[in-house]
Amino acid sequence: MRWNFVFTEMWQGLRRNLTMTVATILTITIALFGLGAAWLFHAQINRTHDYWFGKIEVTVYLKQVSTGPEQDAIQQELNSLPQVKQIYFENRHEAWLRFKQWFSQTSPALVKNSSESQMPQSFRVKLKNPRQFNIVSQAVQNLPGVDEVAAEPQALKRLFAFFDTLGRMVLAIAIVVLAAALLLIFNNVRLAAYTRRREVGIMRLVGASDAYIEAPFVMEIVVCAITAGAIAIGALFLMKLIVFDHGIAHAFNTNLLDIIGWGTVVQAIPVLLLTAIAASVVTAVGTLQRYLRV
Image 1 (cartoon, rainbow, N blue to C red):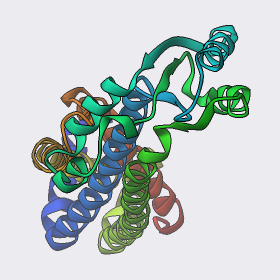
Image 2: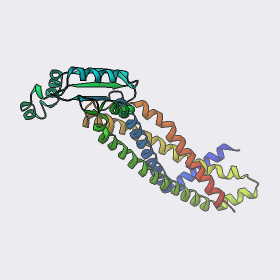
Image 3: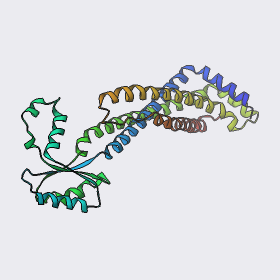
């Protein structure tokens, strides 16, 4: 195969249909950026989930009138559970100090109208696997002296739901735009095949193979896909810097989130490039097989 001829025809084809070429690149770029953004949000959801799962504790709140023997029985029951990793007893004074630390800035009136004697004592339990919260809860919630069993996962549902919804929306938009990009590739290749039908006819008369005839068309789409991939990857780096490092990181307390690193963006690069090239080549070849007949 004469590659100098293939590259010459490819370059002429890109210049001949410049408007369609630019439109194809922009559409593929938007689709790839949407897929990449969905990748980043999915990674952030998993990272946040894993980050908080390591910090989740089960809190066994005691009744105000719980006795020493009742507390010993509760602790003994917790120690006997294989799901329990560590137990810490928090007395009223420690609970009062933590209460003031949490609410002294946001609700000073609440702190002023409260007292140490109102604070419940509790066992703070760290689990080997926080998903087994229900097993621990059922084991101790009906014991004498237990007032309530609570876990922090309930407070994190809103945060997880926010990222999950945002990731689904971005992925849905990316799929729609990717479908539009494939349709545009289909139309671009079909138009190119039609405008060069005379050249194709001559090449067939002199015995050129299908692969030799189709190569310039496919190379045009591959160049568009690679260009679009490079632009989309650059946009993802900007998104990581602006949205994650300066947006989400400042919107939430640094103690609430562990922001994804640059490695996550780097991992997305080969996936996006291969997706763009594979989808473009398959669409182009399928279109040529149907319309490149003289």
